[in-house]
Image (cartoon, rainbow, N blue to C red; front, top):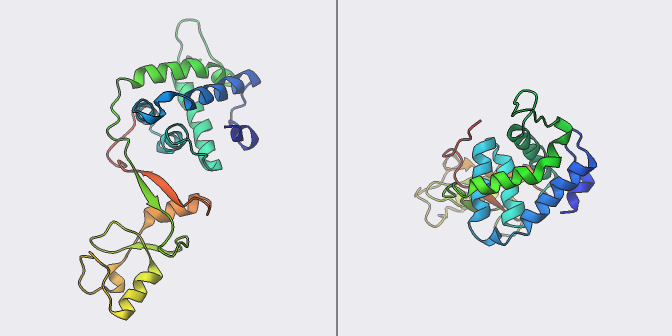
Length: 219
């Protein structure tokens, strides 16, 4: 995870000690044997519930559960998202616990403590909604989608030009619920459009969280 040091820093300046603690914690969790089991899915689910931040949970899932190097936007989501979450967990001027106060610049120094808490509490969390569906970002010929659309009765995504050609030739798309396709039969695959805009061309598939709209955060 050395890539984090090169192009992403927290918007709230952290000490060198804090940065070392923050990234060391991510290294340690990334190396956990639970990656192939349900443990890290529970952690992701718990962080999603606590933070209410789906981009943070999505990015952590890819990093910790899939060991995938994220985009710069996803790295920012992790650094900024975890800063805000840790800040909420730690005592501050507005949230005293006895005499202990953690300054904003010291938040990452306490990353190991925060992670220990999250890992412990996450054991009681359900991971039933941590389901991801692979979204293919290339059309059938292997080219990246330019104008992705869907047709009735199918979850698949097609290139608009491909569907228009089918309409012109009077051909059916197998398993499509519409007998005679027209231009109005198509609907924009706006979810895929958003993914395409946020990811570089070399990424061919994306694990989309399938439970959007079913889960809400505490915040």
